[in-house]
Structures are given as structure tokens and as C-alpha cells.
Image (cartoon, rainbow, N blue to C red):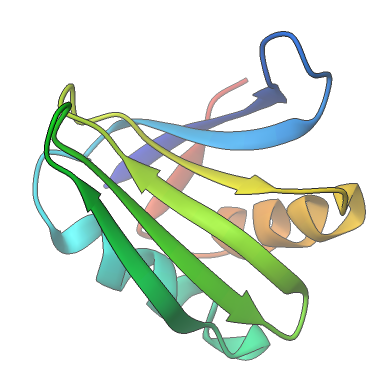
Length: 104
């Protein structure tokens, strides 16, 4: 099971989804994509930053473009740029999926 926070990003005020449990394996990516299948996510680019062992996945979907990031500390997050309504919809889709649990 993956647990996540739905919160405001530091210093920007934009909303994001931050996974804090269950992100150790690479399964987080496929589980997120399965949970969001109704909005048809597709990967447009994967950037691996070797200096800090971070991976940034550019994703296009029916909701628009978003980033799925995973860092060396196994923190993963979903970030939309300038599209706050879409992050709300992703939160709803994750909360409805049994593989995910939203923290209060």
C-alpha cells in the first residue's frame, strides 16, 4: 500500500501529492498509472538525474501535463504546473484505489 499527503508545495502555494510510504520499489510508477488509467496517462519523457539519483517522469494525460518525481530518499510526488483542478482529480482517483491511502 502507498500512503500519501495532499498538501501545498513549499514556497509556491501550489498543491501536490507526496507519497511517503510504499515508494521504496519501482512499483510506485505502475501503481500510479493503474490508478489513473481513466485519464489515460502516457509518459512523454523520463529524465534521470545521476547527481542526486532522482528520476523525473513527464506525463501527459486527459487532465493535462504533470510530473511524477522520485528521489534518492524514496520520496515520490506528483506535481502539476498551473493546473490546480487536475491535482484534485488525481487525489480523488488515488483515494478510490485500494493501493493508495490518503493521510489526514
